[in-house]
Length: 339
Image 1 (cartoon, helix red, strand yellow):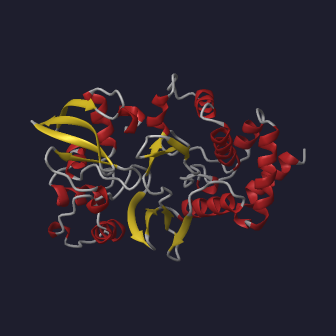
Image 2 (tube, one colour):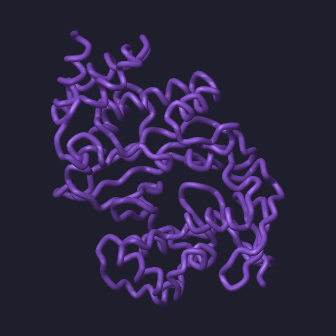
Image 3 (cartoon, one colour):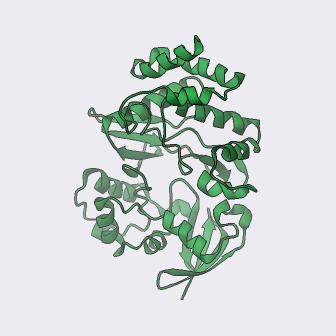
């Protein structure tokens, strides 16, 4: 039986016990600094949260990498042996009596060697590296890995050119009108790679809605419930969420699930600071599963729109004039507005 301490940044927030890779006990001690999903969790629920933090094992490269670095492909074991480190939040864990400050835990030069392994699928002698925090990937449809460049962490993705173009062009047009969206850039001339800058500031962590929904009296996944819950946080949250929904409708993004939107919280107080920016549009526009554009989502969304939605659509439509690659969305928006 081993006793572990869960930290938020460098603050002790919970403890738990592990026996043969099974979580047998979980005791929250600073619930205000915990993700909503585990504030009052059982050991089994906490174990589910831990497994979500392991490196994605759907990819054979990731499976081989994890086995080389940790000698295991069990998700709980992987998460514990990598101290549950993530670029997108501030939580780590250590066996009782051991501790390394989070900022010292993941050295960029070590992580970049892991990232190079993921990106080029070659042997970079990782057996001798002994990296303790290979935050190589998160679950998803495409191979992903973090690299440290230009004094910031960037999430690289390997995907189809249509997916890459969708993410870059949508983020450009949204940012051009001052809507909060993650920054995406093309990597390489064949446009099969894209990178996005980490959108978190110091002492902030991202909590996906799939976890944050347990903050509300009704944690259901119905669309109306989600809208009501987000609106209850205040006008700024309601307005930001409506912009995300409108962009999804116009750009035919059918992949807005509860793990690719959420909130940004303070790691020092637990306070909810703002809605996370619009990100993850790699199955939108012409990268959608059908490969063709339709205005069906826009027409359906605007059936229940108000004056603010129309104003938002006009602003977005005007910005599309200088983005010819998004001409189908421009035409759909003008058709609706000119009726």
